[in-house]
Amino acid sequence: MIRYVENADTAILFIHGILGIPEYFRPYLSLVPPDWSVYNILLKGHGRGVRDFSHASMAQWKQQVDEALRTLSESHDKVVIAAHSMGTLFALQQARERPVAALFLINVPLRVRIRPELFRIAWKVFWGNIRPEDEWALAAQRAYGMDPDLHILRYLGWIPRYLELFSEIRRTRACLRTASGLTTRCQVYLSCRDEMVSPKSGKLWAGNPYVTVTMLKKSGHFYYSPKAQKKLQEGFCRMVSQVQAL
Image (cartoon, helix red, strand yellow):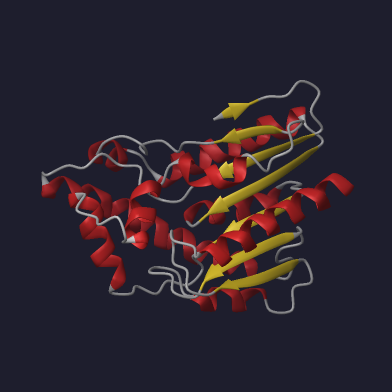
């Protein structure tokens, strides 16, 4: 989704995670002020087939984000970034390189923790065998942006992309430990039961006055309890109000 508002003062860039799609941010789109421009980016290779993802690269995704943010910055006084998972790494890197008004980050993968639940959910999403009451798997399915492919060997092409992701995690973590760290107003939300991201990721911001970290109980990488979803939307609205006051 791209919405350019003529003479808009502020723009927001949404960045989804690996294997994700812009649809993930649907709960927040209606909360964006009508006088803000919106760029809900689709990273190359996502939203298509298994081989499309394999043929994309971390370098291409970073270039897409860089170009989108540069374009928005040239035509707006303030730019906000909202991101999930891998997208938060790009957001943090951009905030250290150019002015960003605020960051709204969900499940930042600065430390990885793989839980068995991840494989159960991935298996159900792959086969589409999900019961209506399985909210965790349904949430993952809604956020998953790849067409299923029964040729299992084609998924081997994903290995380089994940190796790139782990490398990007290490690089971003190292950047945050430097003297400059992060000096952009930032809201970070981490799920206590995340299947992939360790809640310990929040410790890397300990003592940073620009960052607030909120833990979401009974929530995962894609599934958020009703209470957590309310917290996220309230936090998003709070971020919007703070940016409008700048």
